[in-house]
Length: 121
Image 1 (cartoon, one colour):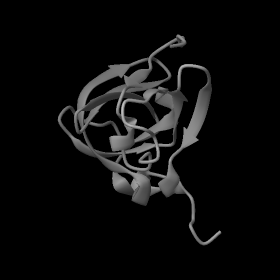
Image 2 (cartoon, helix red, strand yellow):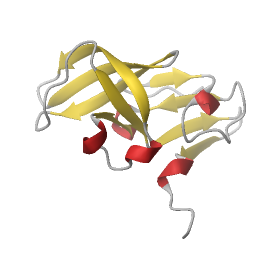
Image 3 (tube, rainbow, N blue to C red):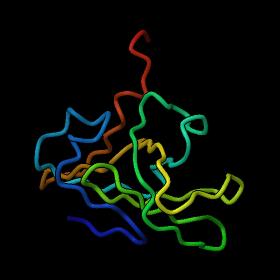
């Protein structure tokens, strides 16, 4: 699998995440922190496409917060703006994953969260 500079979350069963059910079981995926929104439900751009998580660690990075959040059995890493209210360790939050990189052994595909799209359009 390709390497990425910086923090990423490598997930083997991303089909279990909300909005990514079309991925095959065992499909290798990478989720970049900038592809994740973490916060309270009223802060998210697509709340209906989010799922619940628990804040496990917070790291001040100078320009933002790095947030480690558990979503079910998965540990994800996200960034959060300093302009938003600070989260607390153990806080129940909502997590919106916008997209993932999926690897099939030969190519890399960007897969968008299906629940972000309006089915009427």
